[in-house]
Length: 314
Image (cartoon, rainbow, N blue to C red):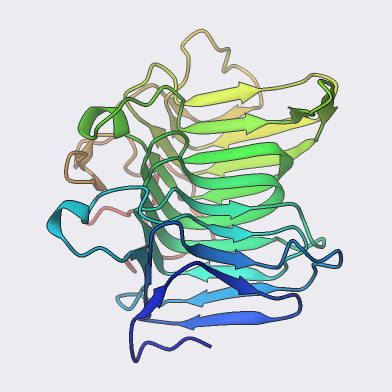
């Protein structure tokens, strides 16, 4: 158990061995040196099973994970540390009220260890990643009230299949506008296959990926990439969500349920990374009320179910 009495500074990799749980208490500050990170599990073992990460932040007492440089120039500088890697065989991982900033990949979640979600993620902000915010590889993730922003490639990659659910999440990627370098990849990747070293194509079913009451937006002409091999399962749905989509895609089907297509969500200030909704936003009151998510990431009641991570207080 890591407590919040003193900061934790990481050099190299923290490895959570099989059948061991690392619990991080609320208010804990973790600082990673260059190329450092956390590996949940130990891939060198053949029986790499049962490791677990529990980050137990609370409202206004979040767990912060970021680089170890304190100069002003590094405050919003990506790529300062490696990633949190949840390896195949890891189970029962849960991250609540965390702020994960300035790395290469925020969360890399690998294949499923059992029938339960590999990761439950809620009330968390992931920002300023040089590559990917959340990388899922044939895994099972459930996320609620999560903001992912400013990533050099994808805010979310659901790669080589798996099972995913995202509710009241905001994926807002303005990387190419306000930071050095351009982003050429849409914010969201959905994929159900991979090419092996032998040159052959291997199917990995995308059992399901669901976006409910979400916002997916950015400056590109489309912010969702569909990489589908028709041989395998490719099940996805956008339900009461605002999404930036190629206008040539047909949305008159059961993949799109009461969605707002290609309308500006009218965030308060994207340059300042303020992704609250302006009073004129089409996302206000546009979601469906859910009995299992009663509050937003700031603890405000979900009275009328605004889209995204924040409920407006107008």
